[in-house]
Length: 504
Image (cartoon, rainbow, N blue to C red; front, side, top):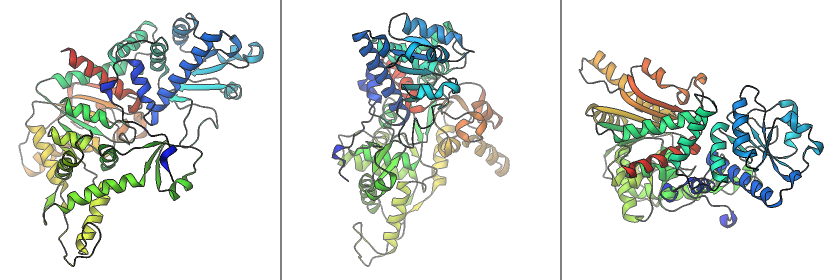
């Protein structure tokens, strides 16, 4: 398949986003929630500008808000949008009694809506904004999530307001503005606007604490989401001193690190057609198999250069890869090259569960069969390379035990977060069962971003309070939790911190 006409995505570069409009525009070239968030805001802005140009009431914009329990949200929407003549605000029962149902009107459905009116709402051009993923049946399909945003409306609409008003607000100003509105209109003490502000402040505090070493963990397809440069920013700005992540994150990030592209999914293509074209779909994004072949080519060359009988760890392997990238691809930023330059170790506890793990497995099979890096038989059998994960465990433990304060910043949960947080219980049982007297490394600061609620029983939804019961967290520490899509909120938090750091 020719990708010439496919829409290439672009890694989000926070260094080029000085205000809210620039950030939202840049997010449209990302994946997952970031793209949904951006495309919805940009489409609503277009609707409002069209209405401003014509003032045709039958083709204006209406915000539908049905929550009887949150009349404060209705008050805010009236003041921020209706009173400025940007659009009307009403409940769905009011809308259905409007003559002709405002024939050509565009709808923004804010929060949960009355299901009895779903058929009418679905018949209009409508964008659905709520944290529940609530949309009419058939509104979205696997890989195609147009005209919906899974996010707290009490955060979405202040951002929309500043965007539509052509605001030059910085990201710090937008976060604080949304939190102030939440206070003023009583939009939820524990809503996203408050948690976002708390996370920004907590992460900033741990970064500027001179005695604190910050350990980042990340799971999910954040590099395919075009968030790879955010890792680079945190590494290069000395915000983190360790990264624990997945091999998949590294492999997909390596594709960007050598200038390869990911692409926006075209829903007219079936998964069977994509499979035939060797294009791998990740939610709403394409990863051509050719990208992974290029990544394998790099790993093959790096692994072939390593001496026989070398015992590797993931962090050591990524140092070899980083050195290769700096030499052969010096003009591209990426997680592995940034980590190599700034001496930040990359830990990968589930190494085998990834493209990078696959590449090592294949390389060892070549060694066993006497093949060179091109698959030619040389007749010379080489001993395989061994991956010793325990060495990396001790390496990270040593970093923690020599630091006075510890902070953890987590995107998602999974093996990376669990493995990093497991260091305290590991030292505890080593002391108890082996008779050691090592200091137990509990975290004094913590910020985590994950959309998962706490009741599913997996680590992505596990609270810091629960972690305290395992002696992983300082009971008197400073912690913040954001229940949201990281591709939406992480850029806001990080750009805001970058602004603050440049002021100090």
